[in-house]
Length: 156
Image 1: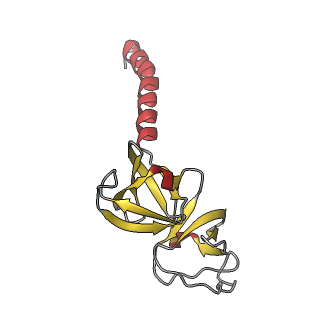
Image 2 (image 1 turned 45 degrees about the vertical axis):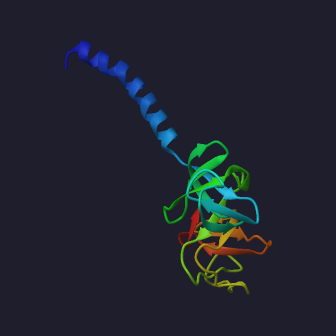
Image 3 (image 1 turned 45 degrees about the horizontal axis):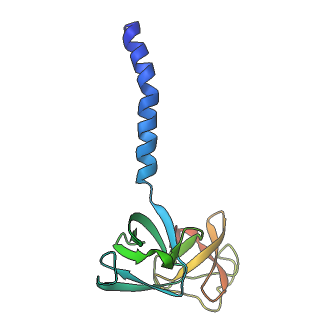
């Protein structure tokens, strides 16, 4: 390789690094959690659009776009909806159960007993309190706490 070609490549590298960094950060979705007792998900950004689904407190989403006061979001299944921005928060870390009949436990492991309100079904949403190894300490909307095996939830 000629010296002039080598020096061109050396000077181009930081430029490509900056471009890759910008593309990576702009493509990253931002985590949102429902912060009200209920929230309606709609087909489009406004009340005139059809309500598709109603979710409950601590339901997590990936934010993929914003139009006015509405966020375009993606859920655990990859489905896309719109939600009013006052119904969600970026400050919470939330999780949702991925399967029906999922057990929650009193401690971080299967040797601990199930909590009295387990099992729970798919789409049961919770606030994340702590992650310890492959277990997640969660709290539901009424303040009950439990542990759940990490692969059984989608965390945002």
